[in-house]
Length: 124
Picture 1 (tube, rainbow, N blue to C red):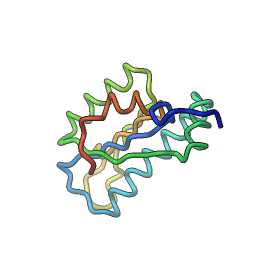
Picture 2: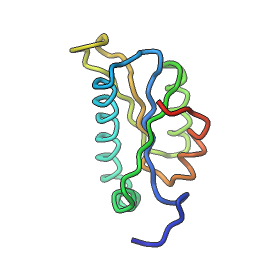
Picture 3: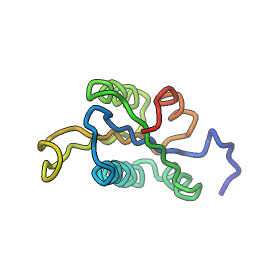
């Protein structure tokens, strides 16, 4: 692995809607959906970043926003910056109605870029 500063090691952000009040198990599964989808997309389209991310420990942070509108605004900002995103829509089998948007996955991307996008958000 090349010698990278902490701000250049790729990172992934998993951003959860706080207004849904998901159970811990539901939250874990929804974040997993986002992480897997972003990972698969990165492996195909951003192979070098994906490799650096996995070799660097596959850093992920779980953060929160107040509602769906905030999630969509953040997704637009990430897409404008050319970063991989994945919006998770629930199937509706358990706690919430089908099609409910629960989590936004962002990255992997260089940590400094992720931090610029989500640095003001609170941990979930």
